[in-house]
Image (tube, rainbow, N blue to C red):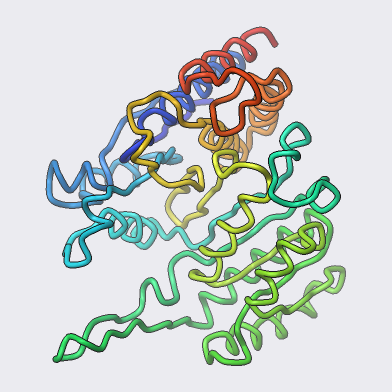
Length: 354
């Protein structure tokens, strides 16, 4: 098969972890006889510095012409620490989601047996945790009207959802629940927010179409507590944009390291595969960042963009083997920490021997 992918490394540790994911992708393509074509594009702070736009038109065209996008991370302290900056790296990410129609972010939360002792939670709570968070990605408060009133001392952000947006994402949630353990948790704040009441209303309308699925409606504050108290109670969770942003970051740390979890953003035009962590600028250029979340994002790319399940499975096996061998970066290493590039080389070597 011919695989055409766009590679957007972004900022901070993005280029370093993307390099390892590309190494692994090339090794898998060679192992299974696929033809890999890829082209780099700029995004985030580096794109602002170069062309004044965090998601340039040339980068968008590259993504549109590609079968999948492998994405690193964006963000830079010079923008984070300047509340008056008019152009920000995150605007590029939001723009990309909107223009590519990336309406659903899939974040699997899976405990790794060899890392359970790294979790801040008790082993009995974490061991066996395995659920999918589905976050709506193109609506809600991140895309609503915002601004400040004339005196500059009053700010507003508007949360808007349409029936079409909510139906699409909740239906996707049910489809994934049918493929897993047939339980769907719809998270909202229907006791306060009108937009959440629309979510709950539509969820109640769709639920009878999936009688095999146990449907649970849960307020977001309760969900935040339940993720910590009883993570194994979830199978598939679906929620709106901002709630999903917060809950998935919370869920990520229970597995031992944010550097371990991948994600897929499913789109109308193409799909984007990226680690859930940020650009970690303090580590940029030091060859110490954990590349495994990005490598596992490449595994999701093989599976979701190309329906190449064996290829994705081999990448996961390689990652599991590296953890068992304790060949890890400093965030999860028990003994001597390995460099980012060394972990990538180890994975490539493992794949080549299979």
